[in-house]
Image 1 (cartoon, rainbow, N blue to C red):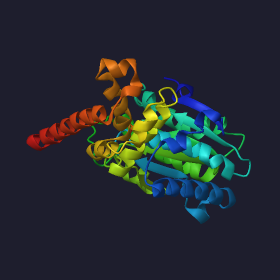
Image 2: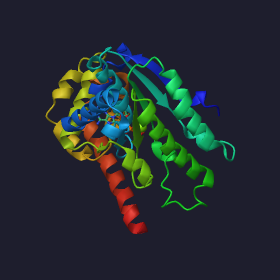
Image 3: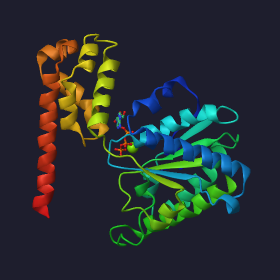
Image 4: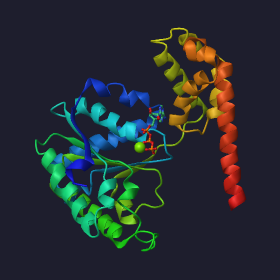
Length: 301
Ligand SMILES: Nc1ncnc2c1ncn2[C@@H]1O[C@H](COP(=O)(O)OP(=O)(O)OP(=O)(O)O)[C@@H](O)[C@H]1O
Ligand SMILES: [Mg+2]
């Protein structure tokens, strides 16, 4: 895989396509505020002062369970940042570096270095503030101390070194780049990588209140095509459904609505006929499936 192919998106924002991205993720307001504050602070401080003065790497880590909105938040952040920057524009570059990790023996390190220290800076050489989304960073920055060499080939370890060196290079030479890394787990991340992050922000699974907000947001969005769903979005029965879904990830909560529609031919033909009872049944199934998984884990321990 070539270095250029790992760039899956390169776009200048604001762009109407990203208008709803930031607001589509429902989390505690403090999580978004903190992310935004750190992003602005990092770009501002690093534009004005050398690394020696700020010790800021321009690296933000978002971590949490799968499907909690980390990738979406990172994209939305770029759009949200744009009006706060002097030129009112921000570039978003998305990387999918997985392919590099399976490069021929000895190639990963070289390709990671090329990607982060040459290719990405060249794409952003107009000097616009740039969010570099490094998704699922655990594939690159594997903890060298925890993983055995047999489980993680030496080449992957060298690639981790290359990531660290590249981050130091970005910190000092490219202050307009802000790397936003996402990860499903932090245990496997390299300690030296974690110590370079200016801030690590946890994005947890939604609680009951957030689950309720997600459900009614999905129903309101769908009411554009099926107006009857607007009433369901306000239905008091949703509260119980949300209670059952608390702790389930945001992706699953969104899918609950379509799953409930798929459960009856009547609601397939006319989704506007969906009821809180339909949603409750799917939520109960999801809860018992989760209990089985947890039970299975316990039995295995
Ligand atoms: N808190 C949330 N509020 C609303 N929607 C959410 C939330 N979390 C996730 N979603 C929805 O779930 C889907 C997946 O989100 P996203 O890909 O950003 O999650 P992620 O944390 O990056 O997942 P992964 O760890 O699997 O990569 C999106 O459609 C997103 O809108
Ligand atoms: Mg993701």
